[in-house]
Length: 196
Image 1 (tube, rainbow, N blue to C red):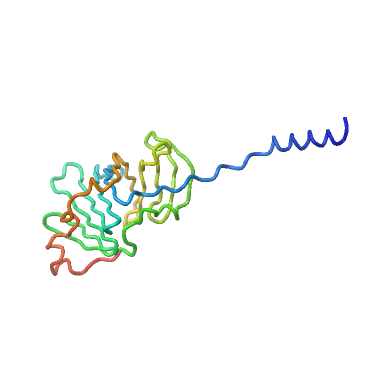
Image 2 (image 1 turned 120 degrees about the horizontal axis):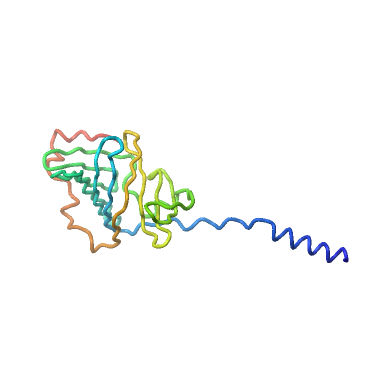
């Protein structure tokens, strides 16, 4: 066998044996400018209960509305969030105003997230992302819809929220009055806003 032919066989064998480079990570997910989502959180591990959260996200108007209902509760807690970082948490009788250092999450928040790979979550094959908004954000590979996310509470507890439904678009938005904090959020008792 000629040395040239032997060299070509050796090079072909080396090329076949070398591992192919891993595929590039997928394009980070982008939220629609407006959406409605229903999530459930299982708080039973630390002795709590189930919680349902209805989210109305409205980026063009710089606002979000969350209805937080604990298991078997009569009165939901409403969380109105504004783009400037102001958040009003209220029910029929009380209100707490919180000023966060960061405002409403932009739709492209994941463009600055780290891709952690793929994993099966709640029975769905998911791309997994992480950044300072979420410790973990799971997106269905097949549809691009969020499946769950894990965030850290002010107390440092990790909380996983499972997405039951996710509806993009303005058609699902409640009327503007629902995005306003009630008058009792602006009385003297609530005038001193907490900072998170």
